Length: 472
Image (tube, rainbow, N blue to C red; front, side, top):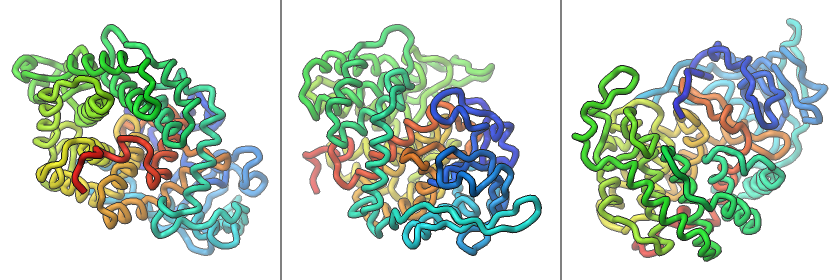
């Protein structure tokens, strides 16, 4: 997760990543980390008011209609607005996906809800042309999407079909494996979930990272809760204990820690977890702490004995370092990097906890912060798919229908852009200079995430439903 600088829509040059391909998966044939133009099958560089086509998939709707270096300046008779390049860090939420990104995503929606024809204004060798691409009449998202929405249901089924054909899940990174496993469980694909769970039913050893331990525990817990398969209980129990080892109990013990040649003592927060179980000099992080909290809560639901003192210490850490605006930083309330995924994850975690007045007030606070930052759903640090996934899942669990509508509807164009012509979803460039989600898992992780997001109106997982003992 230590990401190298790789800015995308933060920088018009993309620091070379427009020409840097991923090394695995179906997108390795694509020449770089490009913007996916929805189900057209085309990929492009983003400019201030246009897209420049750099790749077109074979047997896609755009094949034979778009060519390399075509500059798309508008759609369905409307010119694109202006994209403002720049990083998106800190509390202030300024520019989002306005401009060509939002306009193209909305044009897809309009076309699929009408004739199924997307008409693009294209500059080709200096001459303007109108290019018509047949997308099909997929329909519009409903006013309550993804709930009671035929389009959402169609997209979910297409994504599930894609995921079921994958042969890479068992050797993928932890984010992908866990999210795919949860997606299988949510759709009743118990056979596939069982195969993945039993292949992952072993206790890691040595200097492990907290990420895979938490994700493994979360998935195995949900698998047990759905199937009552006792074979995974011992592993779940051991995973919870491993996570305790990575938690800071006494920050004073780390006052002399260094990272990158700089003192880091202030970054070791009581109750928090960092990247590694054998605690290194980096300090604690909000998202790894929240993932451990979710793992502990779900393990307790499975009947595994959990140290509630440790769990409550983590809650105290997260709540103490949430800003009064509902913003959640990298580790502090005012810390850098996009907060949105952490906010959604925190909502889900707190919905798993016991109901109390302060818990409900906290969820309301963070929900408001997520609404204010709805233009940053795609802007996660390290792996931007995490931000998209947890934000759009968490806001649906918030219990605030108006808040959910604001976040989901603003990001509807983003969802349309991330769709591919084969039913999968793909990671899109973002404003965070540490983003490498595309290089970690360009298709499987975002596709699994969207299955859960689009199916949230029929919750099957405990993390979706929350604690059943909570007062309504």
